[in-house]
Length: 167
Image 1 (cartoon, rainbow, N blue to C red):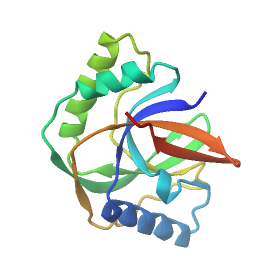
Image 2: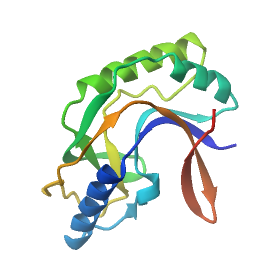
Image 3: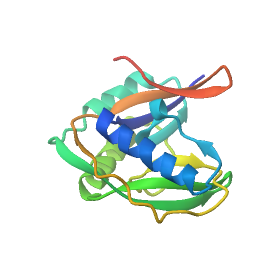
C-alpha cells in the first residue's frame, strides 16, 4: 500500500531554483540522499499507509483559500531519526500555517489519522546530510499557490516516486 500525503506541487521556476540550491550545496561538499527534482514538494500533512483516499480527497476539497504567492526563503536543518535534513523555507509562512490548520481540522472531522507533528513549511532538499551547510543564497523564485494535491509515495525500481492521485 502506498504512503499518502497532501502537498503543494511546484512550478518549473520554483523547482529550478531549488535544483540550483542543491547544486550549490553539492559544490560545497555536502553529500547525502538528494530529493529528485520530480519529487520536490511542500508537505502540508503526512498521512502514511491508508485506503481512505476518497475521504482524504473530500477533506482537501473542503479547504477553501484564496490563491496566494509563495516565495522561497532561507535554508535550514533539522535532525530526524534517519539523520540531518537540509531544507528550504518560505518567506511568508502565515498563509500556509492557516491552510494547514484548517486542513487538519477537516481531516479530524472525517476521522482521518495523520502524523500530528507541528507544521513548519519547508521543502526537503537532502536527507542524511553529511554536514550542516545553510549559508547559501537561494535564488529568488515564487509561484501562486491555488490548490493542494493528494499524493502517494511508492518505491519503484529502488527509488521513491511521488505522484498525484487522480480525483
